[in-house]
Length: 314
Length: 258
Ligand SMILES: Nc1ncnc2c1ncn2[C@@H]1O[C@H](COP(=O)(O)OP(=O)(O)O)[C@@H](O)[C@H]1O
Ligand SMILES: [Mg+2]
Image 1 (cartoon, helix red, strand yellow):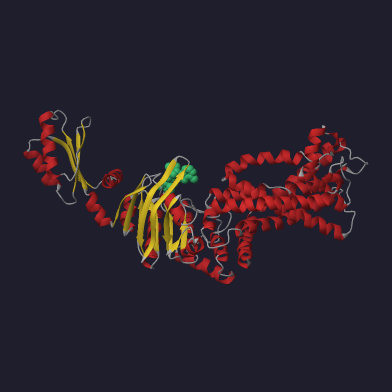
Image 2: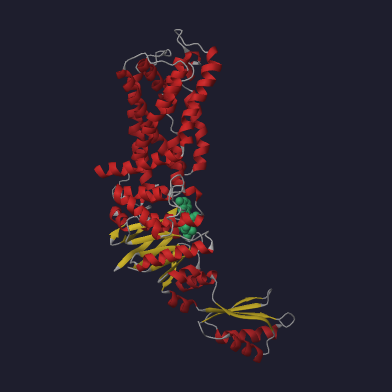
């Protein structure tokens, strides 16, 4: 079944078009990463799906319910941890969870038990009775995530759950996300980090400037986006003949247009994953008589991924 | 409807638990009026005469009850902070009535208002303020204080949502002081220029202060023929109704779509 589906979502804030027609289909189970740079429209999309903001146009169904016609049904099925840790500094961690349990009609006894149980399960029981204002950023973020699990949701929205965290706290959030996914929760998380999407997601949706530019399984996307080859010509050997020879070699393996920068004497070519090895590339350049300073075969940067997405969509 | 009340109770419990961790908040709420008792009661008070020759401190103390009961700041700052930090969004994503959280907060502020009243009354009694009427009047005064605080909280919450974060709320809070000063709380209004006096006499805080003076049997300020001061208890009840009718829907609508 489809957990989240959206068609033609649009949203403007004054003159800023935050979403310009977003289509989404997230299958039940697993982790879907909404990957995009700052300002891409990730938060806006999450807020619409979580019933916090109505779209200007388009439709969205979450857990089978329309976000506009049946917001309460949607809210019963979802959990949300927003972009800022929405925890109450002036309460203890335990109290934060207890109050949410009361609001969700667990009753005092079950709300108490649930708060204690969640803190233990996510390794926060040691700090549970301290005021949250004394907690570290990573702990607060984890508490924020847990606060959306007081009644275990079918679908969990996490907006940039690891932005601004140190590596250890990131790893802790990641393991919590994996554990939840394993227990059957569908998770839609947003991130600016390619590696995060790569590690966690079973599906990646790339969003840029309010549009979905590319979506698919991480493996598929990698094949589509491929790798990159960089060549930097040696200083003093960057005359026109060397330049042409290098371009010829790269065109022979490239899966798209070359990018050249004469100032830094560098050439970059997109290649299919596994299209060429480094030694082979060096051999070919050598055979063509090109004197190089540096050669590398690497994964695309995030910018290149977004660019590839934009080109594919165009 | 019943679930809205239990959700509201949870929101109220949240506010009261916060206060329990932060007793200085109560100390500040009560500390302000105590500060005014000292400044006005002992320093300026000697130069202020109450028409009819009443005791100035007996005049002042009910006015200070009124400024506390009409204080929108705690609710404004709390809602602005919750809004700025995403707590409002978290609550809005829960399957609970949209009315519940603001309602619970208003209810908890009313309880808090009653507590601060008791503490302030104790200070008042210590400096010579006295109650001259029976228990029924005192209960009516307490009910009025709680109801006024409840209504004022909705103004505060609405303002807090509009402002949207703690910093802006902090800046806006400076505006509240003149509203309190431009009333009969500290001085009788008849010495003010006519236009200013008209504003002060129609300030809801003036009617509120006058109604408490009447219910406790303390010296009153001259009404200058202003209707709200001639019928202060009715006028206060009317103000409470008007404020609720205006600000509850505004606040709920803003909360639902903010
Ligand atoms: N409430 C708002 N008012 C005005 N502009 C907004 C608002 N929310 C988002 N925007 C604008 O919409 C665009 C998308 O924002 P957002 O969804 O927050 O992106 P992301 O979460 O991917 O960083 C940005 O240009 C942002 O400035
Ligand atoms: Mg964002």
